[in-house]
Amino acid sequence: MKDIIKLGLILLLVTAVAGAALSLVNNVTKPRIEEQKRLVTERALIAALPDADKNYIEPVIKQDTLRYYIGYKDSTKQEIAGYAFIARKYGYSSEIQTMVGVDTLEKIIGLKIIQQVETPGLGTKIELIPYGESLSWAQKQIIDKTSDDLVVDKDGGQIASITGATISSRAIVNSIKDGLEMLKKQLADSTMENE
Image (cartoon, rainbow, N blue to C red; front, side, top):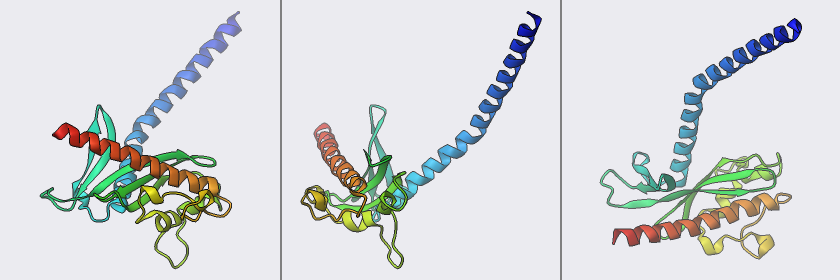
């Protein structure tokens, strides 16, 4: 009986020390992780809204939920450079998240893949920049397109899907198309609220 109590107390002590250590590590690393997320978002917004002044890209939040971003050309905030949103859809092996920028006519003006863990050598080619080029597959295929143009070649569209990575190609294209439709709806709702 004494051995059971002794082992129970040792287990309790080890568990308490491990819990305290995990809590300490979490408190130390959480601010750094949050700062890294902020920097990733900031860089993605600059890539998605190339004509916007980086100091005047603002989130539009409704009911405690981020809806989209609005970018202005300068500090007067008189001229809108565009809107940005995060497109999400599950690809072959992960959720692909892309920051997408559109102008006021809803034409895609920039994008940056924020997160993906697709198959190396296949699905990861969506953000690979080939040697000697300045744009990734996703940027070359999607920038300057509108919602109607967002269909991969395997589905009868103009966007050339990546060989061996059709699912990843479809996921990014369809997520952006869905995101554009949602943005249109949110902008229409905002216009109605302001009238």
